[in-house]
Image 1 (cartoon, rainbow, N blue to C red):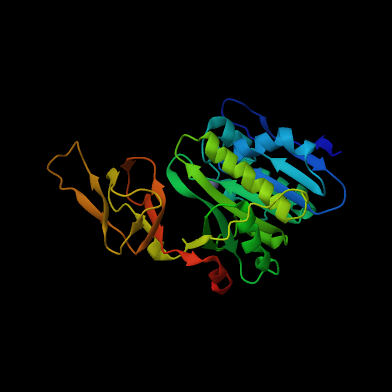
Image 2: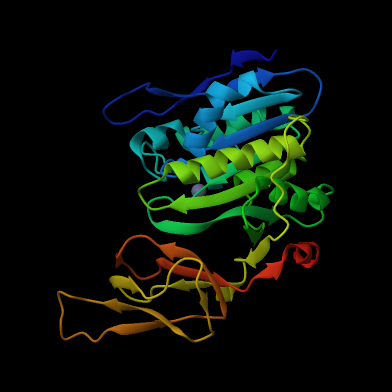
Length: 326
Ligand SMILES: [Zn+2]
């Protein structure tokens, strides 16, 4: 029988309306004997709901089924942003996925990052950190691998992605020193992320796929030895780090996509347009695909500005090609 304890921590988050205010980040520790220690985390960005809902589900059900090891559950690691339904922290505008800077914390967001570096990362061997498109983007449900060179555990990443069970896997080259994956890499923690859904809404089916993926990862890591692994042999890898993968708006306007998530497109194919209904004399601007591939990510908000990410499109690669990508 697993032992359950709360390991909540709180960080100062003063505002003009509330001096000395603190925000509590909920953490559940579930211990089930010998085995690795694993953290399952969501809500690094507060408006990304699928992982938050899936980990809250595990908060209630995992103590009854965990067979080995220790699991830390953090359903809303940026609790202030989750409570506000925002990507960034309301009190200081911080992006928790850029706040792991290894310096004295300058506000709420960096305090959360510092607490995770001091209290969580030294105690775990593996981390699954679930994201989604949030309010402004939608993703084809995908696991995410970020590589930082030749981490000794990189060979285990394809197995973890297969255990997560989604047919897509996104690859990023780790270049952000202050990100959660970068901090985990510094601490020698095996790490998988995910991008599941997005927009301002979520759905029960996406939450279930995320929860099953997290359980699959715990199985792959040896914490649920009796549970069959949902191995997906046909995973397609999409390199979204390549500059040609991202198409951004070059002027303000209303974004009208002409293709769907998951659709295959050719290079230079017309995939949408930018229009300006309040200025009917302004001609529509055609949007063309920067390269051939699959639409993996799509902006979820019509009104757009110069620089906004509209599409991410990349060719499907075999998962085995990961070893040659850094
Ligand atoms: Zn995110």
